[in-house]
Image: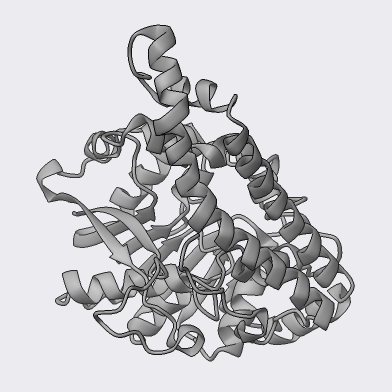
Length: 394
């Protein structure tokens, strides 16, 4: 068994102005899911690799006279393995249970949540929704992460329930790894910028696909003098994100309902354009248009950053297979194609120069309010979540 410490109790989750209220039983269920997800990630995932190396791969080689060529052959072989079947079923069930528990928490207090958000959002010039906006079908027709109704479902006037459900559940799914406010990716990005682009003093910043604002706020806080524009297609997410930001006293962000394929901003008007775990939730056609928009919107010398998981190219077939699980079993239909794309070629095709592109990594800062102060020479048990960063200077 792994020596990974127990995940933090759900009671440590951070609070803000539109946080759902949880009961003892709600927190107990979320704590169970955090324990389950921790066990699956630290004990069962390595066991999958051992099952492949010791049983599945040798059997495949015996039958075919060679090792599996790609992740598709690995998947077909692994689907017959009982350990993988068990892990996959449990991981899918844990996500469904997260959504069920989150919806139970949110729906019983939906009126209160919507009223709190409406009070924070009232007459704000920094929240710009378009009642005639048409959500693109690749978002409207997908229940991402097994979340009923996806990001856009509205059950009442001025609804924020979809965002509140995501916000209340992700702490359990990540076992606190993204911090009390689920903003670890944003802190990773802000930390990357401080280390790798200290000269950057952006006057205008654009977040494409801001969602609930989890990753956005640390960047906005890192550049308090900057004007920050955050766009998303989902009105419930924007209402929640604006209310959350206002309640946390982050006031330099304007939230706009718009499509990242056609951003209503002038050419060359941003010093920094970024996305965090966004591109894999756009269609294969849309991603090309979005990359083109980043080039149009950046000023000369501006910086574009995307935080994602690594591309498949160069990874061993088994690791590709494991990373492709979300596409097949977690309602992420665009995951596979996005991680197969030659992103450098896409960026070059819209006008970026290849010699100005780069691939890097960003590591989250451990939330010491949850895990305590970490010593430099002590194993962090993988708590420092990391992301693949690819970007370009214009």
